[in-house]
Length: 127
Image (tube, rainbow, N blue to C red; front, side, top):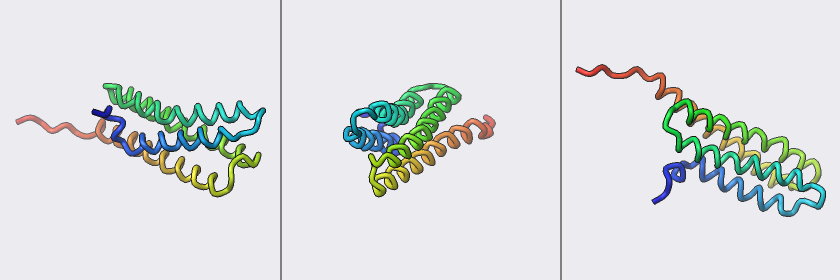
């Protein structure tokens, strides 16, 4: 039986993005291990924080980890840009990865907004 977070589309997309980032960085030339490491860490942090947030019991705790996951998406952008500027990423790969990051960021924002809406929902009165 899968963990609950494994059923989330955004988690699956984050894992897929991480896998593509790892594959991409394997080809980075010697001397750019720092860039490969930083991109891989930021990418993995997205899925990791989604999983950890889903394991939390309080709404503020869950939201905290989802916000960190969204921040990790943002961290990937400049690292991906530098890889493109250095010629380590082809234009079509760059475009696809950027679109994936935009989609993941929107999905995480949806999770956060959903938590906020549930928190602010008026409670029904018992009769």
